[in-house]
Figure 1 (cartoon, rainbow, N blue to C red):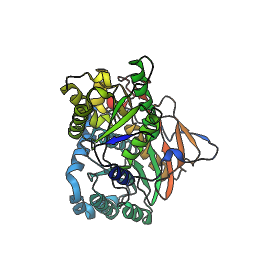
Figure 2 (cartoon, rainbow, N blue to C red):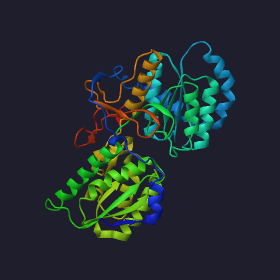
Figure 3 (cartoon, rainbow, N blue to C red):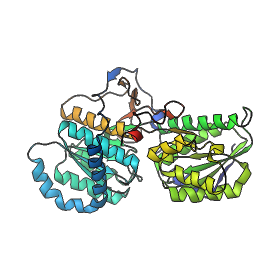
Figure 4 (cartoon, one colour):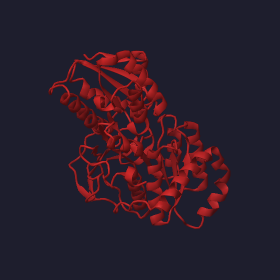
Length: 405
């Protein structure tokens, strides 16, 4: 059994990881698949003015907080005219990944003339619940949950939306209760396996085709997050095949400051034994890890730094050769698909069924697999594809959302 070395007590780690979702969407079984077309062609790349407008919406959402409740009565009056309104809760509007959600949703709402209301609840469950109550008072017609960390506490809010017959869609993470019409995501474990496998190939290339005895640094997200749990399990499914590798862990907590500190500490402690660094999400923790390596007088390329989620900063690090292999999470396309499917609901069209395969020619996210939602009590999950950069797709490819915002 692999020896797992950690900066936190093993028992504590186990307890905190169990706070995430108990199942992975990738394990669900489906009926024989049918192939369907995507709801519509993906929205074109955002024009500069539209991008600025969407970024402004994200920034404005960050300042809203509970103040949005004060506008509920006026907004309900606005909706009386018949314009469809979509409420969207995000976390941490300053994150490019979240901005991609907002841009995708904004562009597609503009395409159909829908009103989009965005609130940055900053991953605070009480703020999420307040936002949901406000949205219900405003008379929204659909809801998108685009990021949370405690996915249990917010369930009563999802259930209130269900009681009001307001369709719920989810991006990034999924509520662990209630009915979610569709959770649109890439397979986190599968993507992690892809990135970790490529990291191992890099390590082999530097050691005569063999995996040497040594240490892998794992920089995690927040340990309470289901996303972190899936990333860790995907990574260990690869590293468990190499008992000569020990894994040491530091909680990067979804930011570069913690990532830098943990990577620096672990490099100091394990020094020449370190043969690789795996960062759960390099888009928001990669530059911290890279900076720690460079501050130690070392070359990031020697550690085959890999992970999932790129961001604009990650694109630059990939082009410079400081990140080795990163799976892109198709955030922009996920948000576009969510609004397209909400449009289908408004038009009375059926959503894809569990077991279906959805295809769109030329789209990086295609094909999408529709499976049972193993997080919520009821609903479906659409697993969309994620390319490995740069091995499967050049970092300059215009289809990558990092090159479109």
